Length: 336
Image (tube, rainbow, N blue to C red; front, side):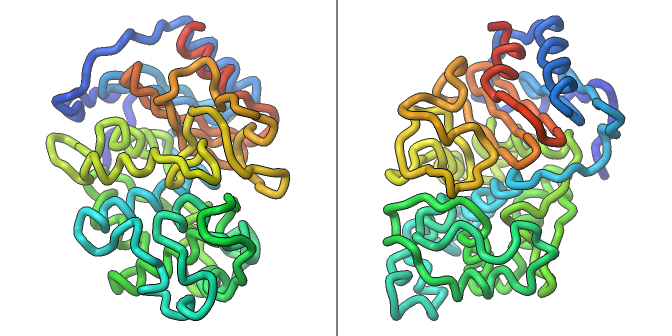
């Protein structure tokens, strides 16, 4: 049964035992942040704090209960699935992908690890085919055939290639489609049901093909915030899920499919079509006004899932592109 779409959905039972009451958001600050979103082509803002919904607003004619494109916000499902499979003993993040993707054993790709597929440092090109899943014949086949452009671990290349290769690795290890494995292991318990865009081979586009309602995406954020615990049940280990928030030597601000608010170091350049304002940063953070433990899933069109541990909060923002400042939005929201 799906959760009811109410103006205020009480979810206090979702809180983990470690959760703490945080400084409450102020109504005026919530209104200012929502106004910023609406003025910048926003579709929705939903805010959860201390395990309950404290603000929800549909914007510019959008239906709050409708599935919305996540674009690259979809990528975070890759780390949730990897954490679940590592918990189950099906894979290890630091195993060589070529142990499963045997066609890579004869060249430089033999050194790529599962972790590097998820933080986009395996040396594959950023994109294979089109970023739009439905325009591709078989994204996984294209990724497996792609020639490396850098040694494993030395460069960050953003796009669909690494996750398309990860998807094939999951198929071979589980005999399931990745989105089916994810649904059974994690998302069913959250009552979260993505609508997936697929390539012509029928494979879900893990890098950008998911649609969710705002409240569904908020539940995903709450699972992240609670370290993998949901309604008193451990869906993912906190240790495994914590790996999603580890940056790489190649790019410090990108973990395993999550953007991190830490000082920026790495190989990000103009060829990386990232959905955040990170290209011109030199040592600064994506959101200087926020603590370093803040992180987010982000997609083109300014789709955002923010997790603010110090405020015990999760924020979903949907939009349709245009100018956007993550730092400004969160400064308004937190009253800075």
